[in-house]
Image (tube, rainbow, N blue to C red; front, side):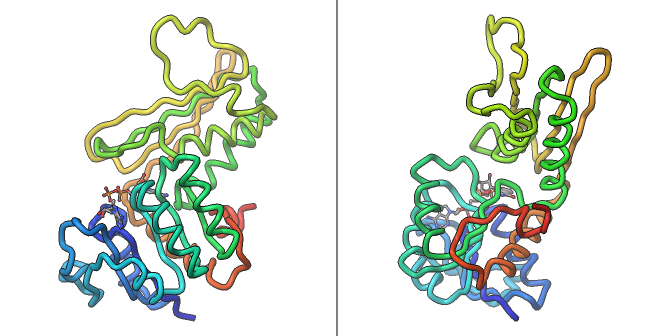
Length: 266
Ligand code: NAD
């Protein structure tokens, strides 16, 4: 089955990667590209070096959602919430990759998930989703006596910190420990923070250059340590995962699905 896809944010880094990836495969048909009204390139062809998709970027979200089976959203929290509200009126399936979502944005996604199937993931790469499982297993086996820390590095333009992926990995570690993440988390340190409490899970963010995404889970034991790391060297891994999720989610019952379900890793 060919899935009709609407891409949000075609002028963005991830939007371009999704367009490139979709254009190279027959499983997906790009039917719309919707950007914000003041985006660069509105009205111009999108996709591939010479606008190979045959699509023109538009600001008409309702028309884009009406034309597709599923929309793929890597934009900003404000845009993601607004799109989810319109998509809910159309029961439109969605693949959401935007990170840094506030509780009100999450509530809009939950409302959409009550009427349509959606996949929401802070990271669509196979490798990172495998790392999630490995981190949970390591935490379970090693226990809270081994100090767990997550460090992430991203390009200088990334707006939210720590990354959604780092938070997901840290939550997996808490699950492995059997602890409540919100009680044991420590996002960065500054000043006289005291000795590290047993069971604390630290998350730190590094920003610079054009790094696409690096995540490492550390487990520090007495006289030994384990590091489980992942480095992305192309945005196309996220785009390919998001399009795989798009093909998977169409026709599923309404609900909010995780990338682990798409990859069969649950
Ligand atoms: P970017 O700033 O390059 O692109 C954002 C795009 O959103 C732009 O094209 C912008 O015009 C568009 N946009 C803004 N408001 C809009 C609106 N109202 N309607 C339609 N489009 C709108 O950012 P990016 O690096 O592509 O990242 C986008 C998001 O995806 C971020 O939250 C980032 O953290 C996240 N991300 C997620 C994954 C993942 O695997 N889940 C991977 C990489 C990036």
